[in-house]
Image 1 (tube, rainbow, N blue to C red):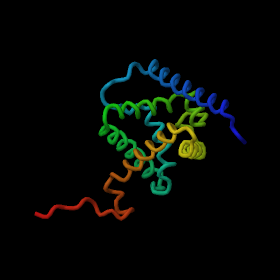
Image 2: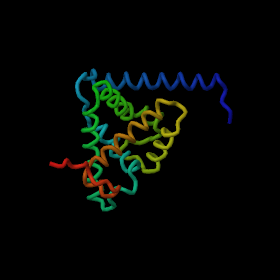
Image 3: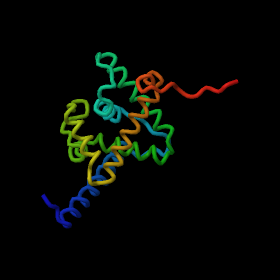
Image 4: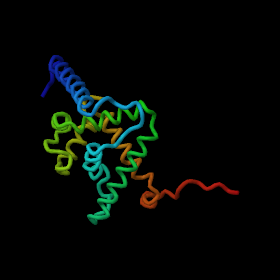
Length: 174
């Protein structure tokens, strides 16, 4: 299937308008953006809780209680990692989670028809695969941000260092 220049431009403009409308709608619903620190609300937690199992896959525990605890811990560590970023970057991450939380944006951009709490693993995997290799660079960048935040949060926990053979930071000799 070939794409004409005209249809490519139409898709690009439609995507930009959708992103702008989603961001504006999010700000109307959630009030003005705080110029302060990132806040991980329940919607962003739901997004992360759905995405983390697809991103981390087999490194997560298989026992249901341990798996749920590992996912919750990783969500908290992602929030901590975002808090370490510059305020402008924190706002961008907040906007990304806000966009993914909106139903129309979730359906149109992520292809997830139900809420994140009801999303199947196959739907989340397809969404991530799509964004990882998307022709729109902004979506690829958003995927990379999610990937780096989640992987960084997971492997920043000393409990996971043995699995990758990391002995920990070098200790100073006194």
